[in-house]
Length: 111
Image (cartoon, rainbow, N blue to C red; front, side, top):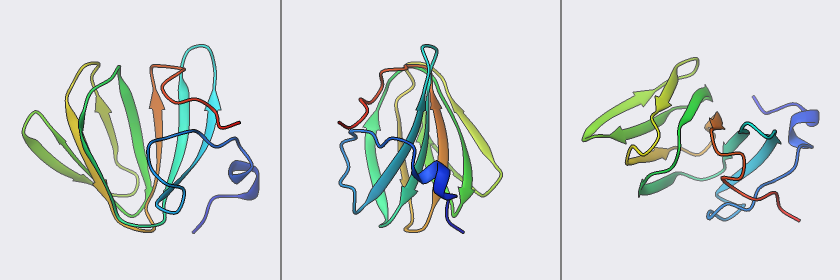
């Protein structure tokens, strides 16, 4: 399963991960930022924190570690990361997740 063409045509973001590892397609409003993340290679994000985030796994899985507890989320399962919570994440090649960030400017749209 891949994302439909009209979603893949949404703008990419300038994220700190190479395009050959993860690609992005974003929807932005003044109130938040919605991002489809497609993992082309296995990826691991180190511990970090920011404002609130909510997400859902579309394909594959995503493993989140927050407050010392690790949980693997499967397709259809959602997660919520409170503002300021230190968390890390990892996922396999082929995974697709959709995240909504409280910060509309969390990542800039790629020029």
